[in-house]
Length: 419
Ligand SMILES: Cc1cc2nc3c(=O)[nH]c(=O)nc-3n(C[C@H](O)[C@H](O)[C@H](O)COP(=O)(O)O)c2cc1C
Image 1: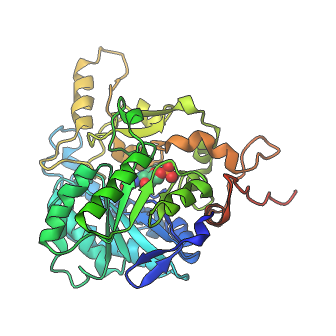
Image 2: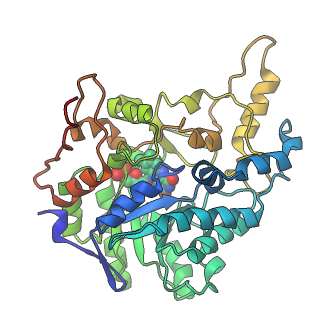
């Protein structure tokens, strides 16, 4: 039994049922998403901090011009007036999506991971612009993630591509799904696919640091299948979180999954946006190095390597240039934690910010090493080189291993030529 015996049908199109999940900020790069697309699967890019990503790829200056505009607030805890220019948000989104979809060369698709918790000090208006600009720019599908907003579909219901773009949601419980579906049914626009993310995934989680072990993906997946059957709805269900081998994936497909969403195995590929030294950190991680904490300012638990540099940050909040996680009204729990630490600091001592981190900066600089639970197993998937470091496999090798491997085997990448 292998993944290649199955196909995902979305509308008229068929795909290899492997979806590379969105990994912000630019860990799931254009190149990584395109690798999946070329092989007939689906790759995600993420629009988290899209202005910052554009500056890196296209040499634009979205971040520096925003920083200049709001420089007067850099020493103030009040960021209520630090706003995104909606025209610039649209411009960056279009640039990034067009850049990616224009390079498609296979039979697969490029989807956008759109985290609704990216509140950008104007949650509804910035989300609306992000969604619409991505649709204008020709994205094949949008996966709504992190903080499902019941009004999201309303923001795009008058867009000409509302019924043609593929729309999916990520949920971690039947409860969240049923709430979303109520609104979707009212608009007669059901999601085209449902990603069920269990407690072993990377990034933000729908489970807490203390209770994640009480849940498992297989149980939630089965509950979602039963719920949809009970409602008479036929929507592909796509499990995600801890699916490490082709056999793990094929088992879900044989039980009725439409596809699987995977990410961790791709974090160490050549195409992943993480710097090479960070990829080696992932490869060297032990199980006890992987923790879930509440350092994210979103209020959601997040899984990361415990020696992530971002966990030691005491930097001044960076909202004037970034500010992607500012709540409406300009609030952020890191701003509160930073100014509290500043006021309590004893003369001559360094600032120590407890509990919260500046996630905008941490993600932008690849200092927040968020990862899936199975990261400690990545060393099973590649070769150790003579200098003691690990070979970074091409994404194609990982994708094809998922697609064709059987019996829990993992095919290692072709070792680099000697010399
Ligand atoms: C490094 C990393 C970053 C991630 N970032 C995001 C993200 O920005 N948005 C999101 O919805 N999911 C994110 N995820 C979750 C993945 O898209 C995916 O659903 C999940 O990790 C799949 O499980 P696996 O990593 O065990 O294969 C991230 C996962 C990883 C490993």
